[in-house]
Image 1 (cartoon, rainbow, N blue to C red):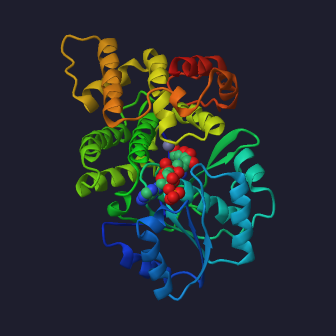
Image 2 (cartoon, helix red, strand yellow):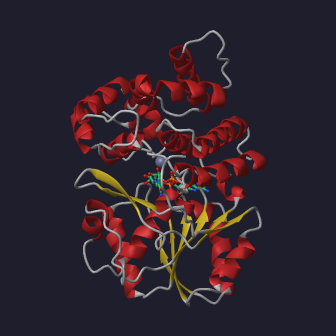
Image 3 (cartoon, rainbow, N blue to C red):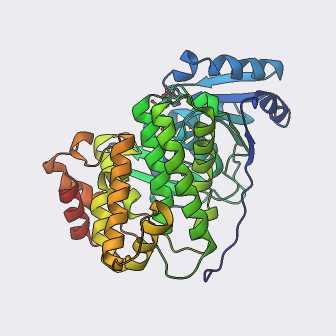
Length: 390
Ligand code: NZQ
Ligand code: ZN
């Protein structure tokens, strides 16, 4: 490990199929008014809403409901939530849903009392809340696996007018105070969303893994998580109600992006930057955007990180190394990744996500260019990767 770092994760996790009683306990730590936020109604169809409402009633809470959080939540919705939270002076925001609802809850928690335009302050200027600013605590009931939002400070908001989708990684004060992870809650996730979440997990791991040349414990952890994900995803696509597989995937998703495996790493994140720009133009399902550009991106940077790509082939995919050059091994590793993507059924191109030729220049312009990977991209390289991904 060559990097210098501080590690702290304040989120308390409850995991398993009887976490409801933990919600009852957690609720006792907060004041009487709860903003219950959720998405487009899946929690009413699968019964999670009734369970959560029952806990809130048992705890004697006054509940303010904020529903309709859309996948890829918007600035307009953020303004609505911030107004509601401050008007009702809520003591806790309880987010019940996937990454969109949880990201949104974090954004509302800082926007409610910030006194200025939250999009400009937190997303454009990437500021933290002021030290004396009130932040409403967030608790989560996770219903869809992939983003890791349940145990991180990430919050991604889309501004359709500006054609920008921007993530802010908030500090410890904004991270969820507690999250309930019940694998059974994920059984009703539609197949397309389920597999998109699987690739999102893989992408989060890869984007931390493909950086740096030092011998780093984080890379060994990443390889273990990838092996578990590949194994369990294969079982889950055959039987989505395989509790063991879904619970392993749920736990892997959390560890893939709760900052642990990024410790001591420079980290790449360009696949997600391109994916977010695609999302700003198309509103595509989040996990399908990194899957759509990954092959073109990794083929592009492979020569600059050859040793790591060769290691990926052997350590993650068990490809025999004997008699092969690093380049041959590295390419076989990427082919194994592509075969797995096809097997689980995620997008391997971006046209099916709604991207048209006319959008490509704009998407390239909207892509943030980051340092940290094996190669610093130029805007024209991003454009070339987008063209190859069509
Ligand atoms: O809205 P409802 O009706 O609840 O339906 C949702 C939504 O349509 C549905 N769903 C969720 N749980 C379900 C379910 N349907 C049936 N049964 C259940 N148990 O699934 C759909 C997608 O949900 P969403 O929350 O949008 O998906 P996801 O978890 O992939 O979140 C995507 C958002 O997270 C951001 C993305 O950019 C995107 O905005 N990300 C957040 C990150 C973070 N916090 O660190 C990092 C990620 O890379 C990502 O960028
Ligand atoms: Zn993601």
